Length: 303
Image (tube, rainbow, N blue to C red):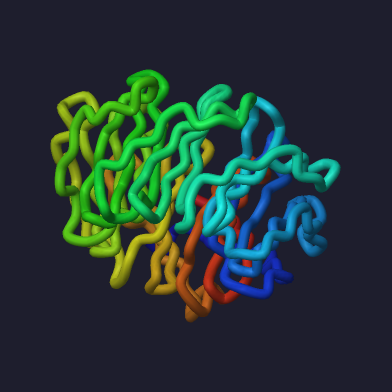
């Protein structure tokens, strides 16, 4: 693992509470963060020290989504709903009340947006009209995370009842479900080539499922000491990273699921608390990580 070099480029500060989410933009150097302080901040990696607040909400922001189709930012506002932000002019251009609970994830395809909520609902929204198209509830436990396969016309949803459910993108009908982990599923991602569904859980296990083979188990790794909060693939699709409540970031080979590097506080001045979100950007191949320590770290991983 020592052949890989890890360089910490910056530590971004300014949030006054845990940083829960990161989102890209149309510009490779620009990204957004959302926090427990209700602030949504725009950052530019060309001038990373100066974040710009584009929205301030009264409750925590667990979920953000950059909607490329409209060049807007969709903010999941806990105990309320979604707010559509024209981030360039720092103004709200629409909102839709959806839930009295938490909003854990937001995904989109074209004009359609899907929202995963703390009361177990997955809600499909027509963003142009700001209307609810469909609402399904397949569990009494939270819907925590989602990932879309446009090719398969499917959305995979990870739940706090330890299960992954595959829904039809158009109709929201339940196509398949299985007990994937022994605790809450916190992240699901289709691999860049679409052949695998990768999941991470509160049980600290990383698993991959063969999406072309009925979602049978392909790989299982005891990846962290505590909950896996998120994962993201590298821009070239050769690697992926996971982050955890154990304060570490781990770098993996995407083809073999072999652990290549551990990034932590002791060796790399990493996060001092739970690492909540990752974003591997195409801007100079820089990796971003956000945590409970209220900071965002900027890394380069040199293979």
